[in-house]
Amino acid sequence: MNYDSYYSDYDAVLGGLLIIAFIVILIFALLSYLISAIIFYTTSKTNGFSDLAYIAWIPLINVYSLFLLTANGDDDATSRAVAKKIALIYFGLFIVSFIPIIGFISSLAMAGIVLYYSYRLMYRWSGETGKAVLYIILTFITCGLFFAIYGLMRMKQPFKA
Image (cartoon, rainbow, N blue to C red):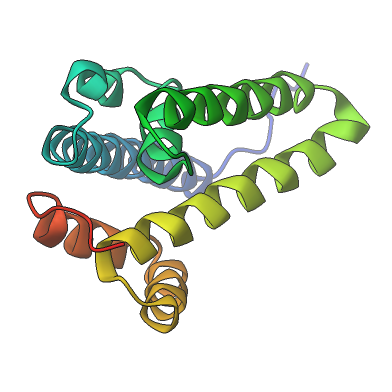
């Protein structure tokens, strides 16, 4: 009987590299989560939402901080209501994203919502639409690094717009 199966040393090397790549991606994901939580927490405290600033530290719910910071409203109550409505739509899309065919469209809609509200956050920080569009493009090109740097610079300053 021949139980000789084909395994080479390259299989072990490839497996090790995949494990290392997974660990590196996990570390970068955790680091980006912490930086965005710090940005949303401090920006919320600076711009009058200190009672809900702690939400920035809760995973998956921290997008509510983004929606709250960028919501349109005449007063505090309407801004919070608009942010809750958008957050509920976002979480509905998140649940639908697990359905195989419709999930892809739902994921695109979620990405579009986050992109639009990130633009609005950049607009509120900079006060100009041209700069906000440029900052979103730079954020996309640098895979979020620009958002982290600019957010850390602007998080303790009140909104311009």
